[in-house]
Length: 347
Image 1: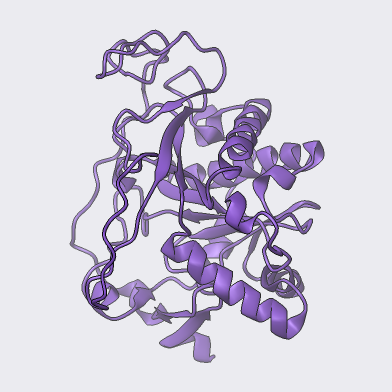
Image 2: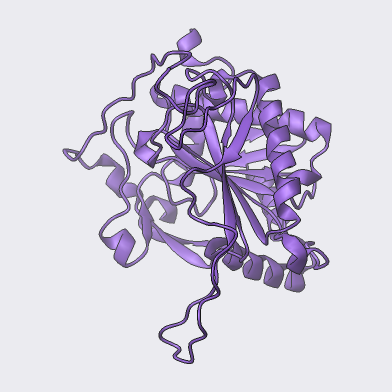
């Protein structure tokens, strides 16, 4: 088959191509290996500023929270009040204002838990808090980015279960690309792109990892990272605050199953960056049509061959185009076959 040889695949969400090189999966590896993360974390660490009752570097004491806890980031990338930069007539030196808000959200008071080891009921609480934060911030900002960096391999400096929420007065580059591509597809086909994509994947089955009435998890046809997945709403939801109670409950079960599969794949706390994408928000987009959007989350995990061997985006991939060895179909098969119900630490 041609798919067993080098070929390119188009990501219709961004217009970018990905180079797939299946024949390279047999090459020997003698490069860098990551140190396995310590799995035996304490339930409470008096030196961890995200733990209940511990004082953060700015002198503020984290309250003795019992569930989720959200606070303004002590070192935010975006702030709400900034001076307006001067206009530039030079097309090579363009500058624009960037206002926003950055928050940290703790998932649970216990430091030794992660989403796959939390209960589905606890994950529902996390989802409810995501929605609560989104409702507040989306009224003001054009884009609300909920994201989680899990593990040191993805730059996470604190092992306590948490995510971040950055809100922007502007539409960031990746969402802007999707906004344009999704709108163009909808204008041409009179259907949301990801609704059609879900239908096609359900017909083919070869890239599906998890399927239930409300959610579909696939390794995208155009995936860049080895075990990248996309979690897509099957109910025409446009934004995360569109979800019904039943859809939130099914989402919690789906997240727990997917992240358990990830951990069980190499029997480690599987690192990833993930985040939610939906229709833009804020006053500028409040009355605009969002019919072309479908709510989805993307998981970008770096591990490739084992708990200690990761993929690096360097060289050709930085200078030319993204490239992968393991095909999305092979990755989906491996994830599909891995147990998603019982975490390896409980066996």
